[in-house]
Length: 274
Image 1 (tube, one colour):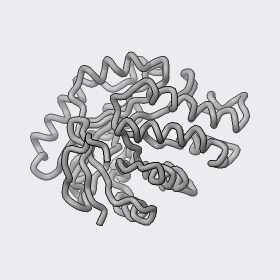
Image 2 (cartoon, helix red, strand yellow):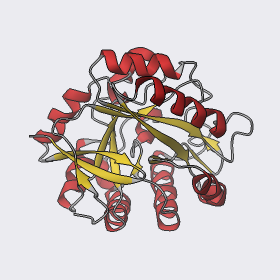
Image 3 (tube, rainbow, N blue to C red):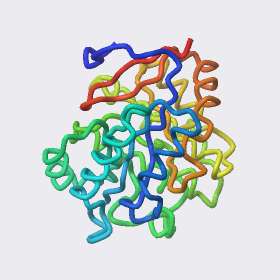
């Protein structure tokens, strides 16, 4: 186990570690409403992870100063009922690493999701990235970009929705064995650096046939010695906050995992699933 783990928290914590509010360009959810809903559904902890995607956005990225101010306000109001963590989702590409480093160094983050939302400034959800490439080409290029980023950037906590490209593959699910070499190299590096991965429960919302990342990836992560895992809904609207948190904990237990993690000041905290 990495020596970054600072303590063991209470067992069976219910925490949503991937939530977007009005500070993300694709959400209009007021943060205070999100906190109240999280309390109502029994969450003990919530981490807001607003979008920053340098390279493809200019004035659409999170206003970090306003965001920090609102997190502190909600902590003052509800901190005795739920833990509220300051996070961010960095949609990093290789050429944008310096910009993300500047942002990270400026704010007191608890948690950072490292995600791949674009490659070479081409979006997945518009299929700009996939168009003109074979299924093999865009799948392998996606993982190659993630690998290059994790080789060159360390100030993050977990990899977000690692096989997200599956959401936007009109040709169907690409066989895991054909990208396993790249995924394994990514996971080995993540584990060696004391980082983790998330299980993103948007798989239920998108009606995907597997977890995100897939059970194949989760089994490989565990086989390689990976332990740090967070659970996040990737909610942009109120009803999805905390969605399938309990069910995902049960899925992780079935796969042989014993713990789930939360973070404080970029340090992972272990919680038993027993």
